[in-house]
Structures are given as C-alpha cells and as structure tokens.
Image 1: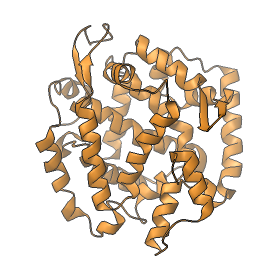
Image 2: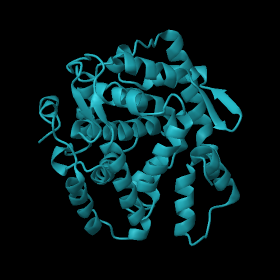
Image 3: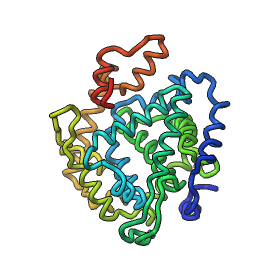
Image 4: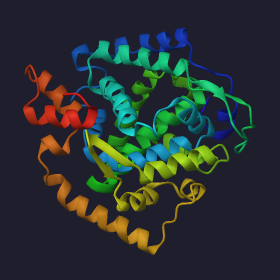
Length: 327
C-alpha cells in the first residue's frame, strides 16, 4: 500500500501492538552487521546528516508540522508537559532518539520498546471537531497514521535544515539517507508495506499531507505553535533565554506554505529578509565551527567509543549536559 492520502484515510484503526513491534524489531537483527555500531554506524548517511547541530534550526518546523495533525496536538495537550517543561520534554525525546541512532543494537532495541510502552498509554478523544476529525473521536499514539506522520516530519525537516545551510545532497545521498530512515521506521513498528518506496515517493507523501485537510490546525495546535515560537527556555538552572526573534521568520520560511498559513504565520518581505540574512550568516560561519560545537554530543560520544576511548572529552561532556541534561 502506498501512503497517498486516500490509503492513509483507511489506516484508521490500525495500531502497532506488542506483537507487531516485536516482529518489526526481529527483522532488523539480520540487517545489522556490527551490533556494537548499532543500526547505522559511522559511514551511514543517518550519522552524516544527523550529527549536524544546525538541524535544530528546523526543530520548530518539525514541531509545527507534527502538531498540525489534530491527533498529535490533542495528545500533546492532554498528555505532555511540553509547555510546563519544554527543555525536559526535548531532552527526554532526543535522549531516546539519539540512543536509537547512535547507541549499540541492544540500546536501540531497548529504547524502541520503552517508547512503544509510553505510546500505549497516550490515548483519548478530541476536545473539538478539527478538519475531518469529529469532536469525541478517539486517537491513539500507536496508530500507524500518527506514527507515520511523526516519523516523516523528523527526517524531512533534517534534510531541509541540512540543505539550507550546507547545500544540496545528491540524489544518491538522499536515497541512501531515506533507506536509513526506513530502518528507523521499524523501531516505531511501522511495517515496510506502508512506507514510501523511495525518496521521491516520500517527499510526495509529505507534500500531499501538507496540502490535505488531514492537517487541520485547531486551538491546541495554535497554542502549541505560539508557545514554540515565543517560549523562554531554561537550558541551565536559573538561566532562562527567550526564543530569538529571528527564529519565527526562519521557521515560517522553512514550513510548507499551506501549513504556515494554517498557523496564521506571515512570511512577508521583512520576514524573508530576516530569514535570508540568518541563513547567509550561518552558511558562512557554520562550516568553520570546531567539531565539539558543530556536531551533536551523542555523535561525538559514539565516535569516541568506536575509537576505543572510555569516555568523550570534557568539552563534549559539558555540551551533553546542556543538550540532554546529563554528561
């Protein structure tokens, strides 16, 4: 089944249960040549793209795209501490994601099972009618459609950020990267038959979704979107920093136009000029950053262990404390 919009509608009721997850994880073991390097390893495009800290310039984009799905926005509103503890939520989420990418095989499997158990408890009903979804209709975090959309926004946004700063990847590189994301999809329990066949089909899925009525920004999503672009973030105890003003312009510029409009974000000449200036400066300076700043700590930590070191250096440990709240 190809994940065009019409088949997507027919996924309602399909959920990933314990048996489905275990079957999905079981097919990964024969595909992993060196379990110490995990699912991907240092030569993979997943590591090559994912190591770049600049990917988080599109974090707001990914969050707004995810929450444009009423099921996701309602689940965040009813079950998440995002607005009370945004940094904690970020750290918990990406500690799990990074372990799946940079951890060894057993760590990736363990995190997949933990995430699945958490998702099992996330269910409820919609507070109000939003797009094609009626008030009182049920949602569940382990529904295939919700999982598929979360999965897609992560990798689509990572490539958007990478290319905005570091230039275009080749078609072959994108295909290799997409094949890596298909392995990651198995950690969510997503069956191969519902995944787009290649990078081109994947980008069509994302574009079809962006232009569909399925993504209908309701009150919960608007509230979350406003918070994402205006919050004050406490990265270190007692130090709260506001989201910089330019981040709203870059986020609006990176979003697909239909989703940007649904969030009622403007991207006029002034916003465009701000975004262009930010990206021009980042393109000029970013490639010259030292590795300890340019690359995310989990990637550097994984490289240290692969090189036979007992622990990453002090700079990496301190940056990890900022990123993930632990050294």
